[in-house]
Amino acid sequence: MTYTYDIEIEKEKSMTDNIFYTAPHFEQDIVKAKDEYMYDSSGKEYIDFESGIWCCALGHSNDRVNQAIKDQLDKVTHLHTKLVNSVSKKAADDLLRITGIKKGKAVFLTSGSEAVEMGLKLSFAATDRKKAIMFSNSYYSALGTTGNYKNEECIIKKDFTAYDENEPESFFSGIDFSQVACCIFELGSTSGRVLFPHEKLVRELSQRVKSSGGYVISNEVTTGYGRTGKYFGFQHYDIMPDIVCMGKGIGNGYPVSAIVMTDIVASAMAGKSIGHVQSHQNDPLGGAVVSAVIKEFEERDLIRASANKGKLLSKELMTLKEKFQCIKDVRGRGMMHAVEFDQKILVADISAMMFEKGFLIGANGLYNVLRFDPCLIINEESILKMTKELEKILNQLM
Picture 1 (cartoon, helix red, strand yellow):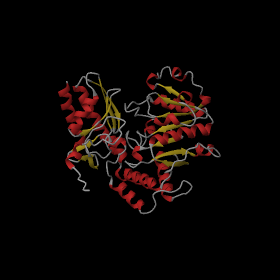
Picture 2: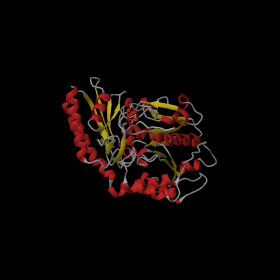
Picture 3: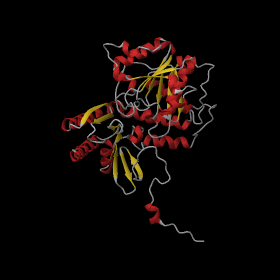
Picture 4: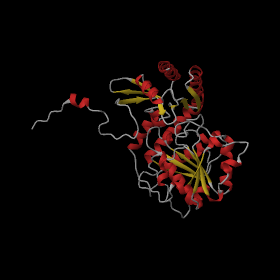
């Protein structure tokens, strides 16, 4: 029997016929990407203002990271969790150094959600407590399976926008800090809205939790690795977390995440178990990527670059706000910015029109917010091209 493959029929099929997507998506087949640029199968160029999903802080296909992966593939990629390796040891030393935790330990995992979940489990087990304070609307996707606790049993949600520095006690009323295992901060992303809690609130809450025997956890999955113009979001607040959870930018597109904890936390876990064993925990391949990313950051001075280019992005977006009344707010730090619109214009429409023009921009329809999280190495010309095209589209829609 002769089998004939009909190329034309195959071309008519959707690119997503056999892929399950959890969110709206575009149909273009992206076949190549380098730095801030992506190319589809027709050769059309797109500029990525989402850095993947905020993962590629160094841009797509970074040469140093790619080479580190290739080199490690010829040595050892995966080991049993009972075994040790010098590659992960080196990566742990690098993380302790950049977080400022002088004495501590690190563990490597494969996703930011998993890092957050493990960080919370550590705090519950180390303190023998069952309560975690967190800000409303922050993204902690793994909480549904944290330990044996149900969300309503372990979470104390607080709306940081309700904080009044003239009446701080009203914010803390009703909290029994003796039962609190931790407070966990996401200092900037807030489900993509890019909102920043008051500095006094963050410091005061941290102090109260620590003085009562709990831990401060900083969720740096979205705000870490230069995204806010500093290495980590918590560095804007003059606090030192006990546990730092990382993902996304730590691997520049490679699926690796990490937790860094102080010796105090690690010592409190002696003889205890959190029941969290992961197949790729502390894999040498992930460790090689982590160290390569950090080296690239340091040699190219990318924290400074994020702060400087972020000023240009902010200036250009603020200029649009002055021109268009439909823009309610522009906010951000470093290379993490948001533009909030009134309900006269839907951000899903803007995002689709911008993609057609060759720009990938994030959109949060629930809050009608456009999100801008480009790679830290983006050319200033790309920022100017994007804002010029956005201005044209807003003129069309008004």
